[in-house]
Image 1 (tube, rainbow, N blue to C red):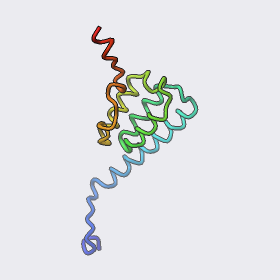
Image 2 (image 1 turned 120 degrees about the horizontal axis):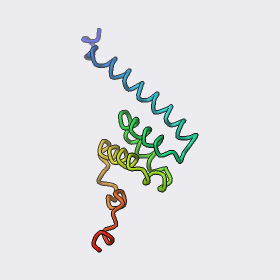
Image 3 (image 1 turned 90 degrees about the vertical axis):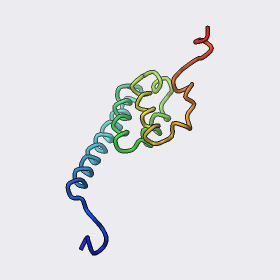
Length: 110
């Protein structure tokens, strides 16, 4: 029936990938609830971004950009996961890298 309809299944990959994706999504939901309970926790934010990068880097970008800058940019892990999400989502060209990397070129030149 599947061959007649033109649909091909690769049984060795599809179930494993969907289970893996479901597990990442469940983990992301747990981490989102944990972050909602403690929005200033940088480790929880980094863990959530890292998990989302496995299933939905666009969502990781949205969550990072919604955070207070003092929280989001004070953790190298959070910034690293944000950059990873930008790369995975092919959105690196739309971000001010000087701001993102916290580089102050005037201080560097002195």
